[in-house]
Length: 604
Image 1 (cartoon, rainbow, N blue to C red):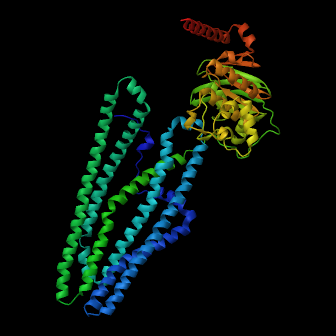
Image 2: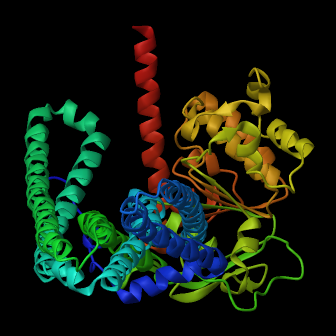
Image 3: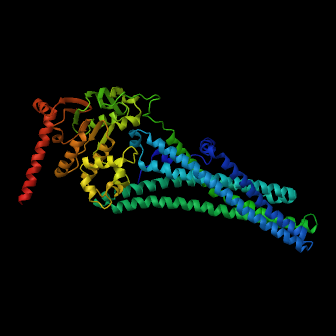
């Protein structure tokens, strides 16, 4: 077995769930007028289906039997008119239904996207990106198919079946009883088919989920597979699941191969009984020939919706499963919420204060333990320590990506939980080690399409961030397209672009999280120049592994195991001979060893 499934991926639900359907139909409420139009034309479409055989009956009994050619011409024109009307009505009904469904699903997609935008980072830690994309795109599209084909088609099929039954009873109730005699058996066969089809559908969805998960995992890790020569093993594992999926689909085909011929057999039996009984009635002058012909046409049209049962049933099952997954996502409450009445400072100065802050990602496992410190406006404070000590958690708590369990974080004297989240984050310029670039041009990646940032301000930010010389060499300069995730730019260029972005937004508080840890020494010197410009007249929190980059910080906090172990300037901490001094000494030795190795290689 390859690939793992998330529990939500196994939700299959019922073939019809009234509770879910009621929630889905709420998205159609704003478009009830369009729905009324679609329903009206659906009924008209049913009427055109019923009129055709009846006109045939009139043509035979009233005009062909009496050899009235002129009357037959009129009936032929009437039949053609019904066909044309049926085409127009079906076009309007189909277009209106599809249009309404697309509008409703657009609203649902926007609601899902908006809901995802509000979730805290812990939510995305637990939910893979691929699964969230499936909810927003594939599952919503499945619901759209329910509207365009499933529900509307089912309503049309039901109306046609009942309409035909009424017409046959009205024309001749005895012939109608003969035609409908096989229906109880058909209902039993359909019920048997639905039960088996549901079992196969459930199994096929689970196996398909494992197949997709395994394929995604294998493609994502193809370098590792090839590096360790595991291609044959992965092939066999994938083949095993692929065989399982093929076998379950073949079972589904067998059920369909039995169901459809059975329906055809009963349709033929019904027509045979009708011909046998109807012919005797015609001979005894109890029934006209046109009625018998109309009944044959009605039976053929009545059995068509039954043949479509398999498709409609599968659509309904898939839609209910998709609705269950979508609403499970939407029902997940936003954990980091804006306050009902946001509060903000009278003026922005850039002061930060942590008061006995405790933070846990998992209950009972604190990553921050009683963190307390103050940062004055314009002060530069560095956070150092071993990986996993809690430095990035301090930054995440300040940005309110996570809410703290105890204590408080104040920005300009106001608890971050009282700020409007968007306004708070506009005052915080976050520059990460792994710079994320969006599809679009360089200008868009600097301004993020914020209308408050003018062209002049954007160019000025690029010049101050030391990236302008590189951009000016490009054919389209600031309109040069950036490839996916900035793959055509070097790490240093991406870092400088992120500095330009921060300068363009001009935040009061700057947060640098390992901003220079993944570049060479030469690029680091260029970045340092941009960094000096970026830090001017700003409060700054600087997270760094390279201790040489934060020698000139106003204060250094040593974070270890979620606590502040030491605090002071670079020189003070070295003289103290504590954890910082050991870290610095260890890092200096490594740098000295690397320098000797490079020098030796150069001589060789």
